[in-house]
Every structure is written in structure tokens, then in C-alpha cells.
Length: 160
Image (cartoon, rainbow, N blue to C red; front, side):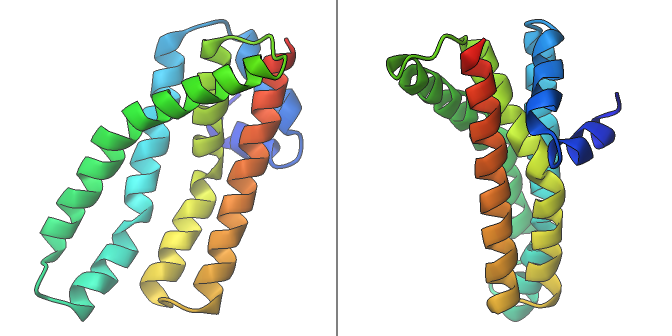
């Protein structure tokens, strides 16, 4: 199935979608591609907010802000994600989980990719509306969706 269809279906049937992802085997390249795709979309989601901030405070130009965001999302986020996934698997194993490190990685990476359309919405709200109740509400929705998808996928991966 196309990734966009899987993302939409993840909001309705997250266990079934993630189960299909696990049935694809332990292909580390696929997991890394999922993470890099998520990182790219998260980077793009920051653009409107960065443009708004650069317009409001020209002391730090837009290209410097974009460079910092690029470094953070494409160079720092992947190793952090690998570490968080490993810790989540170790915690799940201590609580009786029987999954693998790969499945825990895929659970986190898939949750990041699946929530990225909401992050794009959050970026638009940050750029066009700015700080306020709307941005807070969208931020809470993004956080809740991410946690729900990640926990559901992690539970599914640790039950196998």
C-alpha cells in the first residue's frame, strides 16, 4: 500500500497497519527510510514558523534559522530516535514484552511518520496564526496523536 494510504488508515486502525509493517520483515533500510521521511516532513513543517520568526526578528535571518532546523531534524533527531526506541524496548522488555529492538524502532519511526501531516498543520498554524489558543490546541492534538500511535504500535510490537 502507498505510504499516504497507510498514514490515513493508521488513524482508524493503527494495530492492523503496524502489523502489516511488521510482516514486511526486518529490513533496516525500510525502517531508516521511514525515519528519514518523517524527519524531512518535520523539517518542512517548521518552515512557516521560521519565516514568521525571521520576519518578526530580523536579527537572526531566515537562512540561519533554516540551517539550525535542518541540523536539528536531519542530523540530531535520527540518533536521538534510535536511542529512544532502544530505551522503550528495554522498558517494555522489563515489563514483560517479547518484541525486538527492530520492532521498537519501527514503532517509533512509524509513529513519527504517521503524525507528520498533523505536524505540517501545526507548522501552518504557527506561521499564519502565530502563538495562541489555536496553536496550543493543534500542538496538543499532535502530541496526543503521536503518543497514541507510538504506544499502540509499541504494544503491538512487544506482543509478538
